[in-house]
Length: 324
Ligand code: BT5
Figure 1 (cartoon, rainbow, N blue to C red):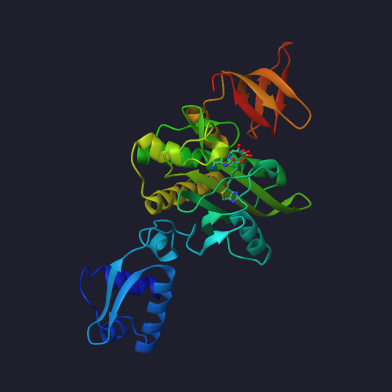
Figure 2: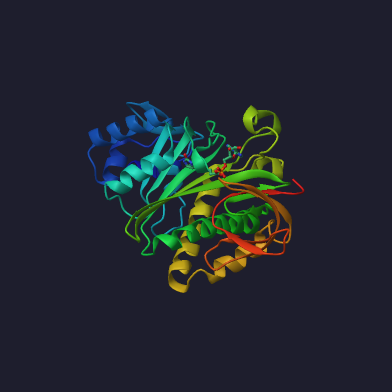
C-alpha cells in the first residue's frame, strides 16, 4: 500500500492530493492512509500534510527504500520481497536467519550501512552509509553442494555484464569473486551455503559494490587497494537504478544457468576476466605460490601452471595479479 501511495504522490509533483482522493483510489480508509503516510515520513520521505489540502511529496530520500527499489524493478521474482535496514551488522547474517525461517527464494536484504560487513575467511568488508550497494540475495537452487561455487562465478559475471553493457563501466573479473578497475577492487561477493548431506538447502549471495566514493572519501583501510564506480565514471551513479539493473541481470543469468547449465557463464566470465594468461600469486591457507593462470575448470576452479611445469587446480584462495 505504501508503494501505491508514494506512486500516486509522485504522479502529482508539486501538488497536494487529498486524503479522501487517496482513500478512494486505493480503496482504503483515510485513517489507514494517514498511518501509511506517517511510516513513509519516518522512513525519510518528506511529505507535507495540510488538513485542508491533503498530502504533497516534497522530497524522496537518497536511501535504498523498498518502495523506491520496487518502482521500476523489472524482475519476475528476484528482489520482489525486500527487507531494508538503515544499519545492520551484515546483510548476509540476516538473509541466513530468514533462510532458516523458510523465507522465499528471491528475498533481498539490503542495508544503507553495515557495521560488521564480512568478506571471505572472516575478513572485513567496509560498508559506509550511503556509499555503496550492500545487499544479500536468498536463492534455493536444486543443485549439489559441489556446484554451489558456480553461483559465485555466475553472479560476478552477471554483475560485470550489467556494469559493462548498461553503464559503460569497463570492470574486469579477478578470480574468483572480485570486480576490478585499474587493478583496484570495486566489488566483491561472499557466497554462503546451507546444505544437508550433499543437497543445497539455500544459498546467500552477499554482494558489496562501492558506488559513490571519491578517492578522498575511501576509508583508510582500503585507500590504496579499492576504487568505486563513481571514480570510473567521474560522476555519481544512481544507486537504485543500478541495483534494479543488477537484480534483473542476475535473475536472467541464474534462470539460464538452471536451464542450460554452467557452460555459458564460464564463457562470459572468460571474456570479462583479467586473471587468465597472467603471472599471479595465489595464497591459500597453507601456502603462497607464484604461478601462471591458465584456465577455469568445469566447476569454476582456477587451473594454474606451476614453476616445475605441473598443473594444479584451486577451488579457493586469493589471487594477486603481478601488475597490480
Ligand atoms: C569479498 O571478500 O570481496 C566479499 C565481500 C562481500 C561483501 C558483501 S556486502 C553485503 C554482504 N554482507 C556482508 O557481510 N558481506 C556481503 P574478500 O575477497 O575476502 O575481500 C575482503 C577484502 O577486501 C578485505 O580484506 C579488504 O582488504 C578489502 N575490502 C574491504 N572492504 C572493501 C571495500 N568496500 N572495497 C574494496 N575492498 C574492500
